[in-house]
Image (cartoon, rainbow, N blue to C red; front, side, top):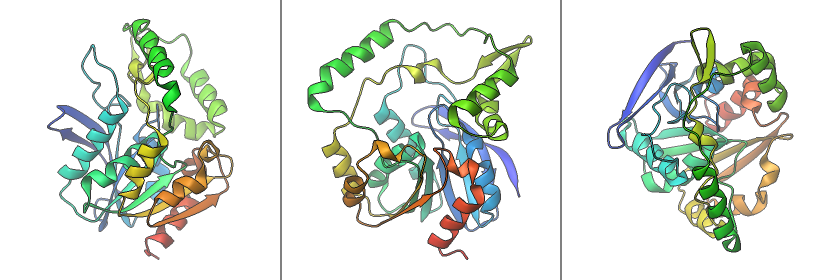
Length: 283
């Protein structure tokens, strides 16, 4: 498998995203974004199992080795959508495949209607769009966000845990192997003077200042003209959604349940790859 480190600049946003390019000579191009507090290596096993697809897997801004936003600012959900749209529009290839997991999938699902014509297919792993709020929760949610922001401490402190204990904790929390936990943590950790620090921007953990309503998600999904493949684990997080309603908003979709948890593309990359390969008619 071909693999190289890459950088892609979002010129309008003045941010640089860093990640991996896999299978450079493949004819089909996929842009990949990972889940919240993960990084681009979450797609490494899947990329090895899909040599037919050229995979650009990048750390979402604030994650892994990608740039953080400037000091004094916060991460807004719509800003992620804007970054995704900018990346897609700046990509020279057409008939793109978008491949997202969790947060990355929710962002892509909202960006597709904004770049109509560039995206041929969307593959979502254990996600059916963003979580939503109700109108009567608007003020209380915003108050929680304000309190989170006002109590935020910008200083980055060294971790009081060893590398092995961090890996073990992540494996336990996500119900994945230690090998997979290494992939999820390595780019998010930095060692200086024999001390470990998170690369991940602390502000990503702040309570969101913005939530969508279900009607807004329905509007975005209804304007999605791509082919949509939703792959989810029987022990994943798909139960957080009203699955039948979300699927009904999409014009063209196929949903496939597989054995596995939220990171089923790490747990069972070959199985997930076979579903993708068959759906894209690559076999």
